[in-house]
Every structure is written in structure tokens, then in C-alpha cells.
Image (cartoon, rainbow, N blue to C red; front, top):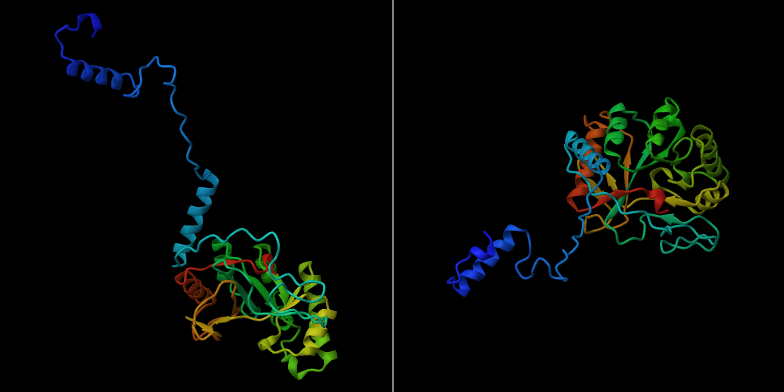
Length: 298
């Protein structure tokens, strides 16, 4: 309706109401005239949205977790620019036990405040194709400490896991109790496996896990002479349904290294390796942790 047709007897209140209606109809703000020099619209801040690729990947990962009966783990934080447990030239590890005598350090956890743990699988006796499928779908980072006598029947199985991003590290040639061996025999076990793994998987390992967690000073010296940078132990070991904790509080701590094994139903009382792994991931998720890659921190 044109302004000239408005009855002059309209009260001031009615005129104000008409102006309000007119302003709303034209999309203008109620506090400014349309031709005001300060009436330009305030630019809106666009909301960041994940790309379709990121959203699709997240949806696919969540579906994979549901398939395996597990609540999704949070994504791990970005790896640190400087590894908090990198051995220094003197043999130290930046906070996990320096060894100025030149022997390699012995590590059970990584110094960090992030709620992350590191998964490690030992030996290589069980070669479950379902575990390979599980790791491919869940994209869980983990490290393999491999024994030649256990993996030699199917080197290719562990190559497939390596292709998924799993680290390949040293667990000796024949899985002996190193404390029962002399210096020369220990060196043969460690250096021999270094050579085998380098030839099979393309890179010489940097880390050693002594079988049963048993080591002595000859182990540290032999490991250093073979090109090993650190001996890696653990804080928790996965059994079948629950973890065995070294600390009295019986809970995970930031930076803990968790031990599991390539084991099947014959050793797990009828439980498969994938069921054991699912139980382990549940225990981690229940305590508010997620999984990061050990080699990114050590």
C-alpha cells in the first residue's frame, strides 16, 4: 500500500507498527532504514564442514567398528614433531631412562600426556586371515615383534600386515630366554633376525623385544651392535578378555605400551585372535583411550 493512501488519522503507534511490517516484508533489519549508509548486511561466518571424503571415511570406519561389535575409538592426535622417546647419541631416551654407557635404553612406556596407548603383537604363530581383514577395516595402528621360527611358514601373511602400516620389529630368531645365553649367542639371535627381517620386509628393525621380557646387560650391548635403538617392554599384557596390569591401580596410563600375541583358539581357550583383539580394544575404549603408532613416538 502506498504511503499517500494512508489515512492521516493513523496514530503514531499504528504508524510504527506499519513500518515494522514493511521492514520485515522487505527483509530489512528493524533498527535501520533500507537506504541507510550503515545498513549493509553483516557478513556471516561460514561453518567449517568436513569434506565428503572425510565424512565418508568416518562413516565407513564407524560401520566397520559396529561390524566387529566395538564402539569406535577416537582418532589419535597428530604425531609430535619431535619424538618424545627418541634415543639420543649417548643412549638416552629423553625421559625414559638414559644409558650413558652406550647400551640401548629399555622402554615400557612413552612420555606423553595424551590419552593414547600403543599396541604390539608378538611372535607370529597364528596367521588368522580374519585378523588381517579386521585390521584392514578398522585401520588400527600396531607394531609386530616377529620371531623367525614362528613366521617362516608364511612370511607373506606379515607382509600384508606391513602393507597396512604395521611396523616390523625384532623378537629374535628362535625365541630363547636371552638371559640364559652368553653374549655371542645373544648377538647371533638378535643380529640374525635383523638380517632376516631386512631381507624379507625391506627395512632393518630399530626396536627389539626380548622373549618373555628377559634381558641383561649383554642383551643391551648385543642389541646396540646389531643396529637396534631401544629394547621395548610393556605395561599391560592382553589375555583373553581382560588385561593384566603391572601397576597397582590396574588401569591404563598415557603412553602405555600394550602387549598381545599372534595366538589362536588352541592357546586362547577357544577364543579367536579377532575376538581377543576386540576385547582389547573395548578395554581401551572403556577407559577413554585411543591407539597411536609406536614408531611415531619412538
